[in-house]
Length: 376
Image (cartoon, rainbow, N blue to C red; front, top):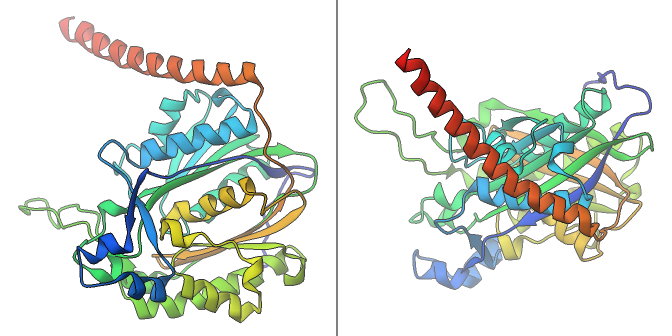
């Protein structure tokens, strides 16, 4: 473990002040999957803890799911999009290689002052994005940030491969971070990688193997399940210990661990290594499956809105993914859900309409400008 610490500005803390999640309406149960591949509800539940997962329809994408989660997060923080300084999106299933999903969401939100970029660290991506955003706030570069994890993994799954298709689902989750002089918020974040294991869990980009190749490579997720299981149970436990130690705390000081919802057996094995009872672990994998970058924020949002997580709770968020990547964050949760002010709510909704109009007018102006310049 490195002893290096960033040069944070004194008295600046990054607090989570808003949150939101979005899940598609279509549910794909284990019995539904049993009609597609050689499996059964009992077989899937015993090996993964998953009973069902959400699947996006043709009208949805990581952009639309992430946008709706972001709007909910802004509402819970009672903030306007213009107040955002930065948008960071973590996704493993982007619609485009470029532009970044974050840039498209920035435009649709009308967040005119925000920089925007994507992070690709597979299922650990949300931890990475959260760490980047929190650090930017702590060093004084920005005051507010929107962090989103959003996925439509159903579109990169091989639905004939029962080893992977039973695991994944679609969804999005978002946090709003804001600068505060009150101690707390995102205390520490650790991020690690080991590219030598990249072949254990991967999906091709679809880019042609060479410039004149006739076809792109099929974009299907591939996984060595046994190796990933061994890796995951080890690093989930080690990253949890590391981030707690860096914060100067003990495991006994942690109220909740919110792990990446990849597989119930992985979660149970990792928490067993830490000797943490399941009663202190937030788990919702049975309803959503593995939603990659969205799984941790979705689990947090559900736990906050149900009252499971409350003020003054200390949380460890911990995940792993392809890369190989892994990481953890420790957070002091300071806020409770609140009802947005009606006037601000109207301003946000009007802002989203104006954002769509502004985007259209800017595209129209670029078109007209190109015509004018061409005729000169």
